[in-house]
Length: 504
Image (cartoon, rainbow, N blue to C red; front, top):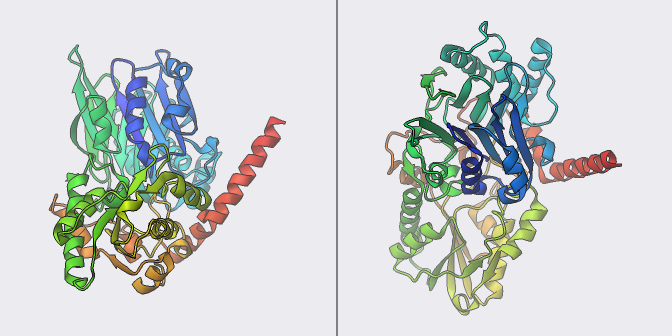
């Protein structure tokens, strides 16, 4: 999961893009980048590892001149967390082309071979985003006119859709031409369009991963980019839109609503906040139905995604709702940290207990999901140490048993605590007296309650059924080898050694 932003304006875009990226920081904490086009039609780029406010200093912002630009916050699922793989990427041919990407391609190796064999294009990193950029560049290079028409753009996007597989939301910018945003044919990864009119009557356009990024810079939400659709905005403000995929079917990633997106965002016509409230109602009803014999004294959320869910559960059960954990807001989201060692270390720095809310009580802890289980176990241990008599645990999502291949860091089933285990076995491993999971049908209906037009979701982490239909067992085995925590540690060590060598 990454966050992407693009703005076409008649005034400087460096500050609006920066502000928008700070609102999307929850989608990626590993690296950040902004690229603009200046008055001389040159790219101005700044990217580095770190949070947005660490990567961009005053001297960087001053150099990011121009009235059009794109930005990115990175959460690494492919490649490594090396600064060389931070986005945006750009190529000089054709025209000068840059791209930011949220998602993951599932046929990267085949695409890399195609690029070399057909176009002699070299890919310099292990990032699938650089591959995607070069595929788009390859198709744009086939156009016969020096100035691209909307048709030329859409034809290149159509060809790109035919080549690439997986989940992706992208924003590309072409020097001397305009900006184009496009989304995969299933709409797995989110992307929205916004606009505002400046004091001179010029209509400015903005693309972003979530609607909340539009709000902070004063853009009005227009609509979601449709699955398979491309929207092209010229630098003089003309907008064109066209469906560029065959048989698009909206199947958004259900985990966006469970965990990733901010509660104040709207994705595919769904209020994330309202969807989580409905999740709490359904889970509360299940607990009341199946745990009638349990003596629950208090309901406590594991902050912050589950706060609204836990509040509704407490209401359904007619039990007190309490904040039993205090969150250190200067520690990032533990799930999207790049390695298990960092995730484990961060939990203790991130949360502290209010002992009076646990002492001598039977506590129902509520979380949005259980992925690897190590974080859940640490939190349960903290609750025990604070004096809880019994600990019950409720997950707003079903058991996560399968890898995600569309841009979420759940790459190997052996790292998922629910894979091959019963609920009772999971409960024993994380150390709780009782464990309950949301039913998948209840989860999907909670989101559909906000938008009945969504008929399908990507629920592959729960079911093992991948909506693109192109994910093989050999591919899953390959990414397990490449993206396990052990493999990440090795890549980071190799990258560090290389940087030390280069400095010498």
